[in-house]
Image (cartoon, rainbow, N blue to C red; front, side, top):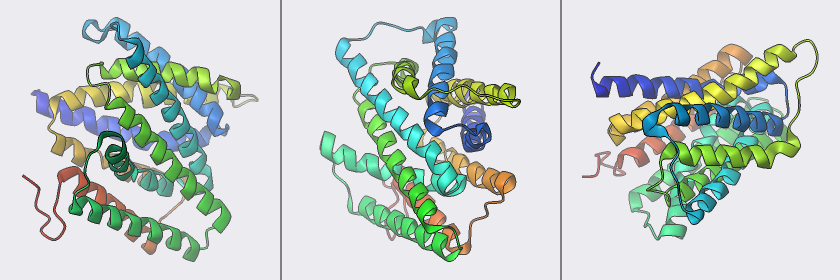
Length: 295
């Protein structure tokens, strides 16, 4: 199998796995903060085993400043996951996931503030389209008869989760010389320590199944998924990575409809399509009006 084909299979598998995490989170029936602790703990254990067992992935020494930046990123990542998991039970997996995908625009804004990066007119246009999509999702939820307080709370939690994920990504940009697996390992260890006060244990007759779900969220949705993702990124061009990343929200929408019967209404579908179209335009550098990739 050639590297490109292998990379596409790895990226597709990683995004399909990511799209099912909301389903597993809701099936645990546990508070979001507790699930995040176990995700970090099991994920750190899985990633440490990968780093120690793979010669090219073994941990190497990094500077104190770099470790500190990675640790702050771990705080932001733990906050992002906690907010996103809480959003699943307030709105729906589909709405929370699509709203969460506004993170590229928040990252662009943080890039302008932290790194002096300029936002082009086309990027501003795509940001406007994404905002229209968010408005349509809110309106669609109200017209579909969704309880407004819970729905808006979930929507807001997903937006906040996107912001903290963008913050973690912005901090990671300052660690160009540090292996990606090492960054994530530090972040997961920090997340485990940070979320330890919120850790809870599954109880009752269903506890073995819940333990299995928590282990899967940590080992599969975090350790395995990130390993597949990093391996794919090394083999694929950015444009292919951008296209395949849309498997994540599509799988999440389908899983939400299949498992919980949460079908998006017409207005919500229009809003989701607007956001994903705007994200695609940003990924590929399309110009507003011409829709041609910027050279």
